[in-house]
Length: 434
Image (cartoon, rainbow, N blue to C red; front, side, top):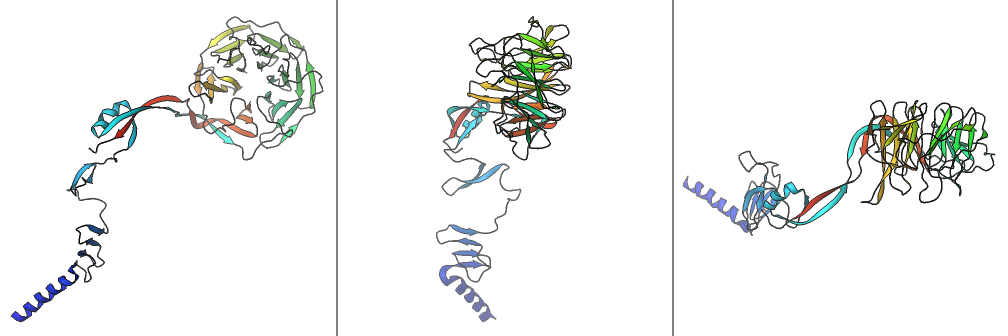
């Protein structure tokens, strides 16, 4: 019995002495200490751990500290500390967080100013067309006299009207305008009488007081009586019996903007004397105007010195009087507007001196509450800016500039992108491990 025990002990000692490697659960240890049949845990002769397999994702609840990590101090000592970032890391911080970050080894190395824009939930959805829209004349559409006939978008350019049914991507071209002496290069107005597109004023090297009518049903043109005032970049609306024109530039001079207005009677082919200017908008051009069924609503534009003009004004044609409405959030330059039946949607731009850039803005005026709100702008093609041609179909707004055509539905939920706002942050750099 004593011999058998001695043999077993001797055999075990011989096993662990081969190659100076020790194995637990393995007959072929590959390191000074190997654990597992495939040496999943290994300790080399230097004392370093060279391999650990299947390390658990979490320590037992009795070990560690919530929200902290196991950190090596560089001397081989491990301790539980809050998760941190390497020395040299730079972060941006608000003022309220600087004191806390300084306790964590950061110091203030500078200040950064950043412009940022926000998204606000507002009504509206944009739909890009599946393919590009091109006119048969091939010209680049922007800032053209534009109306909607009930079935087609009508756009005037260079003595032709281009007609587009929004259910297609094809434009058709009207007969050429045969009326001598009328060729508005830019700045002409357009209004829809119910049967005809009335085009007035504009600038083709000389500002005009002439106008024409185009009938899409008969594809024919008719001259209208010359207006009492030459105008370009003015506004025009149709009341049901008369076209009212207001403001605009009367010359290519420094102080060319005006606040004058006149009415054109379609039935008599005649112009009225000037409408009242008591409480009227200031001199302006590039402003937006619509007819709400009883009043002309005017907003936006810019003055003769190029600055934005604010306010919102209501003109009662029956009483020849002006009244004030609540002012919009932004004074939009080169604004365009449509009437939905309940609200005026205004599309224009704001120039920020701080960023030296223009930003597209969409606003809605609700006469029943005398209030303003933004409508969704996220999703519009960037090229479709304040120079786009727009029209209201009865259910949606059509917008086109160049070949970028879109539909805007004033329903559903989208996002309004705010103007850039300046925020200041402290630049903080980590210099100490805490």
